[in-house]
Length: 595
Image 1 (cartoon, rainbow, N blue to C red):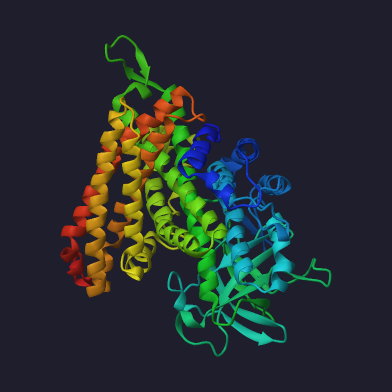
Image 2: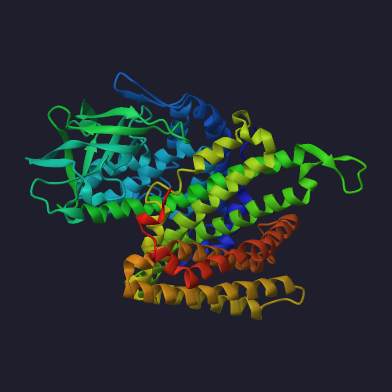
């Protein structure tokens, strides 16, 4: 079982040279220097490698359990979380007025990659907390902000998201949990399922954000409200005191992320769980999307992180495992010398490089949207809106392939739990499901993001990509012929996206129900194409990079060439599926499946 190594150089290169992190300084009152970024990421790497990663496998084996109505996490997790809190890592991008450090979201994302790769189950607790913080900060009253945000940003308390119910999965319109008004608060009654880190002993309080309905609420999503329901009610000094009427009923037995307690939560078994309205009555859907969009970017980052962890383990195994003979049959060789193993490893690495570039490019767009105003703010929000379903959907789909390839590189021992690589494949499997399935992500892309503005935003993105390719082409040096070839390949994919999105838009305008059958193909087509664009950007930036060594530059160039020749070609199949396959989808019905 290999140790995790925080990929500092790759992260720094992606963040600084591909995502353009330094652009933020022009809009900030206080500059974030390269030295500060390096110092933060170096320390984050130590925490991830030395504290969080060592309890990944043991946590998977132990899991969590309920004892006397309380969930107890795996051994070592509370201590690791304390180290995370004491280091101020959760407060990195938190608002300064509530005790945060006010640093860019993109920088905290670079730290989160390490935390998530080191221990995916552990990382879900701070991830959900961040979504809860953003929802309260955006929609909560000043009183709620002052009461809860300082403790949540510091990590002394953490938040959880309580959306799903037994009869209301992705269909939130079916939510049945009730909220009854009473004086300055509400009493909630109902049950929630699949609640990640719904209960634990790592913090002195848990701030549950709960979707529920008021007695006179309209039907459907227009009748949903959002409430803060703390595990412990607060005394006059703002400290946890009496236990609220909310308990964990059970912990789910899952395929993966065993150390992350996924709880069934019961609200109001006795007198009702006391809660406080966040935002306006019946406007909880808006606050929910604030949480969900944050979490969707975070889940895409998880896809990158678990892929990196699996890749590292596969690479180390391939470099050590001897099997088979050299080409001249004179000696036994490490399996990394076999062309098919090299193919699998570069399939993993080239996609990870593209995924990382997209994650940090999208994260910088979030920061730019928060810092800019006027038309610039609108453009960055538009770009982030397009990126979000692709970050969540496309990247987590790649994580399935990459973690599976890691098992394949190990051969038979990869199927044995003791090696640890099977855990990565099991853990990764949840990623296309939660925080909105990838089918929902593709519907968001083809509906809200394509049809919503009749394709104008996506067209602006395509134009910007083409303009950048032209600039790179003009600046080509004489020995950059492979980069020129890669530009041509990305341009071909851009043509496919342009044609496919026009066809999808026309179908959505004509018959949106049938047209959504092409949504997944559009998401994957755009994901691979954007990945190719950012890989070309990486190849052009690596030439002059002072972050990468000569060996690292060579590795990036090989990654880009491989991606454009072996991975980017996948766009054609999704393009053809959109252009040719709509009728075979629209003709399907329940009667199409006969046994």
